Image (cartoon, rainbow, N blue to C red; front, side, top):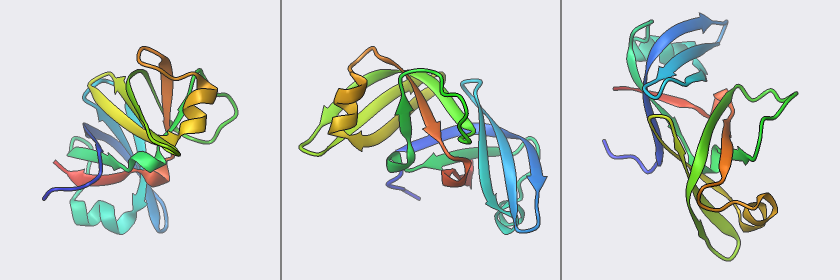
Length: 139
């Protein structure tokens, strides 16, 4: 299956916390970072997820925010430090590629945000991804 989702990060399930309707799935990415996905319990069952399962975490580029430093007091669980490897800016929006340990993440943000943050190749950033915006596929 081919997908239009640019961000596909491979890893291994390290734990699952089931809730009434939703579950949180903890993943160790192949680059060593931890990522949390909040998915339905039905999805956990349908995918046959368990500790040790190989998965791909899928995140649309429009769901990735960027910070130029550590952020305190924020509920976003997934914070991947990296370095900007490229910026492609259009009239209103920009695509920012971020190299992270073990791969790359693309963020679609406004051109104004790129300017306000002073983003350019080599800039250190943190990619921020809400756990509810992470989908899972079995590898």
